[in-house]
Image (cartoon, rainbow, N blue to C red):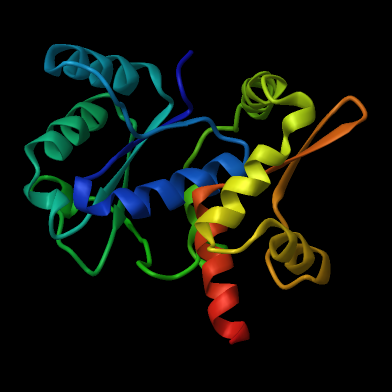
Length: 207
């Protein structure tokens, strides 16, 4: 099933792309920005399919992506299809012909929760397929059902906390509240890449 948003970026900006994708998913969008385990031919075919099928393509222009033939090619196709939205990082100048387009500045190292231009980006995007995203997430969560603490356990491990300390910090508000999804009478907690980064910052400030 096609995603709402395709993110084009250079490998050097993968962390930033991941944080942006998680933020968009929290807003209800389905996002595609990575592919693993594919041959070169399958990779090219998949990229072409996703660019054509998505509603919008967001390109992250940085000092590295502006030199990437992959990013330039994906962006050219998105421009041809009238789907392109440009984000600029570190005041990087996009290559021709994208340097003449309007763009939104994307902060690096700043939480997207405080990104003042996020609303401007949302205005350029289609209505999110929230029902579709929740259905996909719920289908995934069904695999774990009663063992949903797997998600909390992994988050605790990535924050170098034992499980009991992690839960205590959550209870006391020492960590951000996780994203929650309800399925019937059950409530599931989901911890994203963005959540891990926000939690690391919260832990640093508390020291």
